[in-house]
Amino acid sequence: MEKLSFNNVPFADLKNADLEVEWFKSFLASNAKAIHKNSDLDQMLQALIDFAKYSKSELDRLPSDEDFPDFIRDAVASSYIVRLLSKGYYKIQDEFSSHLENFKGTEINLMRKASSSLERNKRWEFVIALIFASICQSVEQGTPEPDVIIKKKNIKWALPCKVLYSEKPGKQLQTIIKGIKQIQASEYHQGIVMVNISNLINHENYFFKSKNEGEYYSYSNFEYAMSDFTKGNYGDF
Image (cartoon, rainbow, N blue to C red; front, side, top):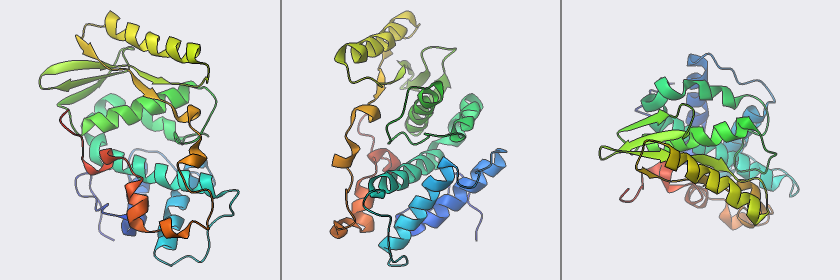
């Protein structure tokens, strides 16, 4: 199969899920990172492949209803992060190469609920850096705060990255205020607190609960669930 480069990854739709996974494994290997069998990352990538095969009638069945929501989240999250990496990593690798370590361990899927951890916070910073790498002049890592600094139209913006873990409004507000204070304490005139609310969402309401909802299993509907960021629709920012 043709070797894939950063700037020529044919991720048009789920028909190319096998190419996404192949590229990602090659990408990690080139950065001396391995995907360990049965790890969280390995299972996420397998979910993407299986969902694509099912969509093309190459797989007879999917996981049970009990496991189905997690399966869908793994497939979507895998495709999303691979596309972000293929679009933006080469632009920020000098600043954010250490963040590749965050693909190790457990609870790496930001679309699942998880306990508070430094690793999860760092994964969110990495996602934000990758998103803005495609639309900004430069993306830098804070030393140590704010977490991400972007340059757009020759203006630098501070982007503190915060993950909300508590359902208590008071604690949520404290976390956001902490991000605002990081902007105020920085040398930059503009900033936005980038908030991840994965732990506050009832994910089952946003993904299919049962395999019986079969009319949704086309590539188009699955692709529609992907963020516009993976397709280059960034608005006027």
